[in-house]
Length: 313
Ligand code: FO1
Image 1 (cartoon, rainbow, N blue to C red):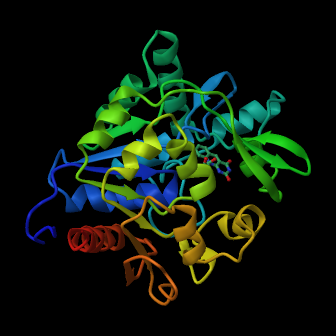
Image 2 (cartoon, rainbow, N blue to C red):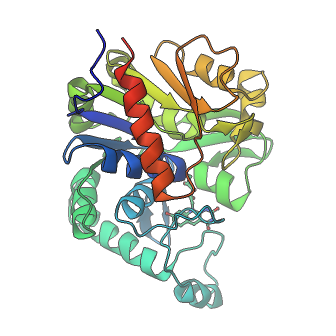
C-alpha cells in the first residue's frame, strides 16, 4: 500500500552518526510535524578524555539541531560554530594530551554531562536534559546507556575509535570490532517498534550505523519497518571521512552505492543517492543532490526523502 504524499508522517526514527546524519536530522526536523522525529545516535565513538565523558556524535547531533554547529561546508563540521581553544592551549602547557581538540564552550558540555552521569543519571536522561537546555525539540536517544566502544583493527594494533580516527588519522582498517554486549535502551526499541519509517542517515555504515544495528534486537526491529537510507558516497568518494578507503578493505569491492546497498542487504526498501550514482542498484532509488552544505539543502533533501518513502510499498 502506498502512502499519500500529503499525509504527514507521525513517527519517524533516524539512525545517525556525526556530521552527515546530523545535517539530515536538521532537515527532517523541519520537514516533519513537531514531535514526529526521534534520532537514535551512535555512541560507539564515546570515550573518556581529561577525565570527562566525551560523546562526539551525540554532541554533533545536539549542536546541529540547536543551530549551534558549523553548517557551511567548511572543514570542521563537529563542535560549535563559535568556539575558542584557550583551555586546550593551557592544558598543553600543563603537559596534557592534546590530540583531541576540546573547544572551550564544548568543554562545558563535557563537564555538565560528566557531572550528571557521576550523580547517577543515565546517558539517555542526561542527553535529554542537555538538549532541552539548548532548545532542541527533537528527541535524541543514545543507542545505549552502557559503554559499547567501537574498536578498529589496524596494522598498528587494535585502536579505540577516536585513537584511530583523530589521533592516528585513519590508518588502513583490517576489521571493526565491537566491545562487550551492551543492550540498546528500551526507549530505542520502543521508538523503532512504533516507527512508520526508519531513515538511515548518510553516516559511515561500518563505524557509525553498524554499531547501532549490532545491538541486541535492533537490526530485527529495523528490518520490520519501512527503511530508507541516504548514501554517504558521491561518485564513489565519501562526502567526509575515510569510507571510500574502508569499503575495498572490508567488503573487497570498489566503493559504490551498489556496495552500500549490499552492505544493508535485507534492510532497505529504498536508497537515496547522488544523481548519477543510481546505476546497477537492485532496489528502488531516488537520485538527487545529496550533499548538504546549508540548512536549505538539508531541508530539501529531507522533503524529497519523505516523498520518496511515501511511494514505497
Ligand atoms: N575530530 C577531529 O578530527 N579532530 C578533533 O580534534 C576532534 C575534536 C572533537 C571534539 C568534540 C566533538 O564533539 C567532536 C570532535 N571531533 C574531532 C570529531 C569526532 O571525533 C568525529 O568526527 C566523530 O566521532 C565521527 O563521527
